[in-house]
Length: 322
Image (cartoon, rainbow, N blue to C red; front, side):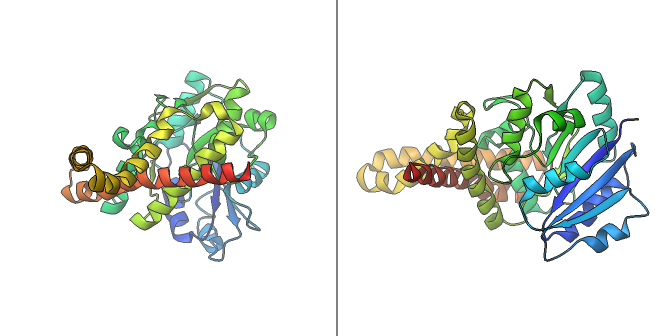
């Protein structure tokens, strides 16, 4: 049986880890170990790991804070499995996850894979709205979890990302610890000639952020990270990545339109209203909740605007350095 090593970097989130480990006790495929890397946390999760030592093959390590990419590298070095599976600490894993992954690896000869994310029924309405914004094609968030998308080749993301030991031995681990580190790593794996695909059925429930203000900060950082990836791989900057920038500039322009071109302002406002209503309807139907639909309105606007703001700021910093 193929042995999986589950790599989990964590920083000040012991409660989240408890939910993740509990879900891992329910797996139908059980040949896996868990490597938890405490990345310089003040709120340690050692007692949580100790609680599960009789239920899971779990190893706990503490290291000085170095960022999630380098924490995963630390985990790779400690792993004994044939396949490394990276999960974020805010994940809940369905009980057939490893069974599905193992079957798909054999069926398609995958050297590495990524899986999508979804909202669990226990998530709060805000979390479900954020999940909608991050997975809907209307916000461009849906381009992340598709095997073929407007952003080019599928690049696994670290919240749900597996690779064989052979890949790690040839490509190495993360070169950067934040700012798009998982996409940079994915691109190098693909460029090395390894077979990388999305496994649609290998989804996890991803909590993401619990408030809209936290979500704004996260998406702002994602926008900055896209510019950082462009520094490494200029060809990886696609039109779809510029759509949030265009949206941000559009929002900025509304005040000017109102003062100088009222007719154009009303036309622009009507387009924005259509976008807002489309997200409200789509989110309400998908989640069967008007409350989630209402919360999806600010979440969708934040998904685009915050990303665009982060992108613009980082691009401006790049031009200043040059």
